[in-house]
Length: 307
Length: 231
Image (cartoon, rainbow over all chains, first blue to last red; front, side, top):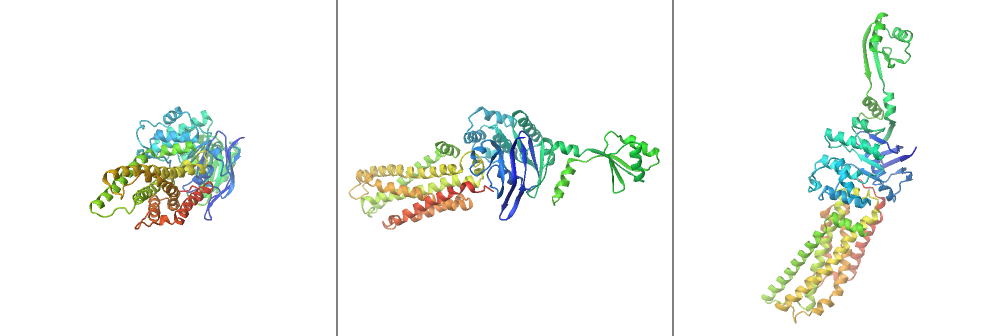
C-alpha cells in the first residue's frame, strides 16, 4: 500500500495550548480522504502543517514517502491547496492570478488555465478584478487554482463554503472526476457531515485536536446496517420464539424490553404474524436505519463535547 | 531570482511607480525653482555657495525616495503579510528566503536608481534654469553638477540601506501606515538641514543607520523558514 501522507504523533501547540495532539493519519494514494470535525477542531492547523505553513511542535509528517522538513520546497510543487478562505491578489483578474500561480509553480501549459476555469464553471470573468467576485466565485477560483497544475495531492479546506446547492453538486462531481480520471489524492475537510459522506472513501473524525477515528466509508456502511426494533410484553418469550421458530440468531435484547433483529431477510410482516400467532402482544415494531449522522455524533460526543 | 523579481513587478504593477517617481522629480524641480526665484526677487541671498543648491536638491530627492521606499515596502512586503497572501506565496516550491530577498532587492534597487537618475534629471534641469535666472552666485558650472556626484552616490547607497529600517516596524503588526511613518521619521533624522548643518554630515549617523537597515533585512530573512504563517 502506498501512502501519500503519513503523520506520526503530530502535535502543535500555541503557547502551551495543544490545538493538535498526537495525530496519526494515513492517506492512501488515489483516495478521497474526508476530514470531519466541528469548527475549531484543528483541521486547518493540520492542513497548514502539511503544506509547511505551520511547523509542528513535535511529531512527523511524511509526504510522498519523504519526511517533510522546513526546506522541503520541492514537495510543495506536487500539491495544490485551498487553506481557509482562498486568498488572491485581488486587484488582478482571475486569469492573471492563475498565470502568476502557474509561473510560481513552474508550470507552463497556458491551456490548462482555460481548462481549469471551465472545470469549475467560471465564465465571463475576463475583465473583472478578483475583489469584485462573490464568495462563491472566489471559492471556485480557489479550486481552479488548486487544480490547474494537476497536482498529485489536493488539500482542500472547506471547499464548498459559500457555494449554492447546485455549485456544491458540481464541485463534488469535479472532485470525484479528478480522483477517478487523474488519480489525484484528495484531502478535503468540512464540518458538514452530509457532504463528506458523499465524496469520501475514508473519513477521519477529529475533535479538540485529536483524531478520534479513521474509518473507511465501506466499513461504516457495514457497521450501520438496518434493523427491526420491536417491543413486546414478554421479551423472554419473544427471544425464544425468534430463535426457535424463525431460526434467527442475530438479534439483541436491549434494556430487557426492546429487541433488535439485525437479520436482513426477515420481513416486518412475517415477524409480527409469528408473534401474534404465539400470543405475544406487540407494543411497537418498526424498521430502523441508524444513520451515519448518529454514528458520527456518537463519536464526537465520546470526544467530550456536544457537536 | 530574475524571474522572481519579474513576477513581483507584474504582481504589484510596479511600472506605475516609475511615473510617480517622474512626477516627484518634476515637483522637486518646480519647488527649488520657485524658492530660489522668489528669494532672488525679494533680494535675499538664496544660496551661500554653489554647492548649496545641489545639496538642497540632493537632500530633497533623498527624502522623497526614502519615503517612496517606505510605500513600496508596505505594498510588496507588509501588505502580503497583512492580506495573508503570503500564505499563497509560501506554498510555492520556492525558497522562502529567495522570495523575501527578491522583494527587498526591488525596494533597495528602486530607491538607489531613482535617487541617482533623479539627481541627474533635476540637477541638469536646474543648471539650465540657472543659466537664465542666475540664482546661484557666480552661476553654476556644469562641472560642479558632475563633481558633486560622488557625494550623491555615497548618500544614495546609504539611503537605499536605510530605507529598509521601516521593515522592522511594519512587520510588528503588519501595518502599512506604520511602515510609512517609520520612513518619514528616518527622513527627519537624515534629511533635515538647519542653516547648512545636517545630521547626515556626521558620518557616524548615516553609516550606522545603513548598517541598521541591512541588519533588519538580514534578521527578517534569516528566520523566515522557521516561522509559522498563522493568521
